[in-house]
Length: 336
Image (cartoon, rainbow, N blue to C red; front, side):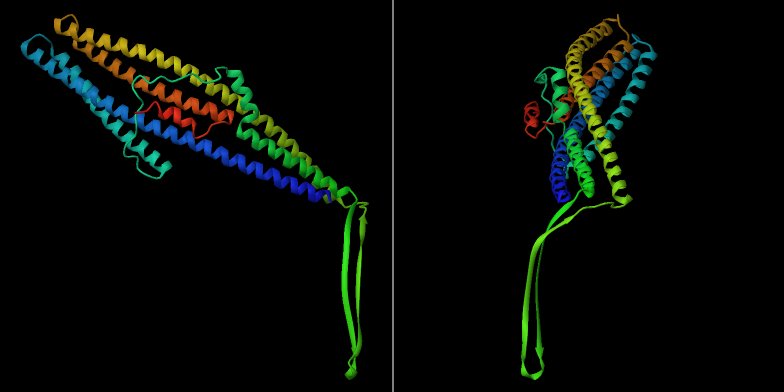
């Protein structure tokens, strides 16, 4: 019967859907664990930066107090430094709390407390995506994305459902076989007889009108197939969109990393100049405090840009459907 063949094909495509769902779950886990890992690293750097900034401001506060005592600075410098110090203390407390939350999130994913995490190596160079062409990544995603694979298999299942329902209007030819045995006995004489009968043949059934239920199921199957077609189109659009966004995330991230690296160097030079200017009296305390804040803030933005770029690389491969565990090897090489 055609219905049985269609049901068999549906079973095959159901396996395809299950395999694609499993592969998609693995890819999603890779991205989520990597994101949680980098969240912890960024939180650790935030704590380190907050502590360093607090120490630097404390030194500036002591300097302002000494200068006020000897009459070379006003009490305003001391008050400004004290306000910045108090703010730095609050920032460090918040950073410690955020680190605890981020470590707990990673623990939830991996099932154990990460005692030590390798940090991103200083000056680590993040490579550009290969191929370095957004349209090629979008084309790959349109066919290779695992959500697209699931939607494609779901459409095949819907096609077979339509075929199965329409087969309800078709004649069916069944092979029929029977075998029977009967016997009878007569009184105490024990006489009697046994008979056996076997038949084999074919049975043709031609449905004249099977009722409105068959027609209703047919229309339902067609409607579900149309929905599956729409779902497949949407999955393809979302896959290409995700690939483009991830590619742009990598591209812009690399540009930001380069810009922030230059900004860190410039901020360090500005801080050194302001410190010298403060010592000789051509800069005031607030200038040094502002320069310190700018340097620490720029360093923090640089770290975040690096982590975001690495995650964007993973998301790009996820959108294309070819993200595997071996892709983490290249990222591990950047850690120390």
